[in-house]
Image (cartoon, rainbow, N blue to C red; front, side, top):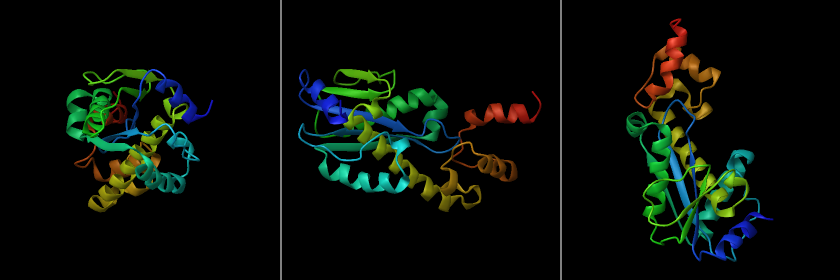
Length: 204
């Protein structure tokens, strides 16, 4: 079954199908992003797949095509402060809820990537494990969220050049840990994510 056929199966029960995914749960720095996308039943975009399997160049190309061909879409975030306050899983859910609710088009159902759905959505939600490899709408949301987050981390790299965010996008790479060791954390680091690292470093 193709990704668009998967969505069309869902459309037998629900007219307006929304796909939703997040990007940036794993990094040590920066906001978490989420996107929601609604296509009509006849829209098929060639080359859409799980954003992690695509090159950055391909994601950039698809980003514009998705926005052009979607019936509706939204990209939203939850901040580092919110991540620290309610934890990363809840912050990712909050960003997804914001993305769904920000659209002018109200979906009849939301397909949420993963095994958990945000609480308090105004429509039914279905958790789809590996949804970005099954559903065109979820895969499209994953691309929008990923590209938007990468662009944001490139902006953060201009604000905090010493951390080289443009290279690792905030993920816990060797280079990133070296920069943290050298300069200490900055205003967009998720301190809860660095606790274990510092504990290990200090021999606890």
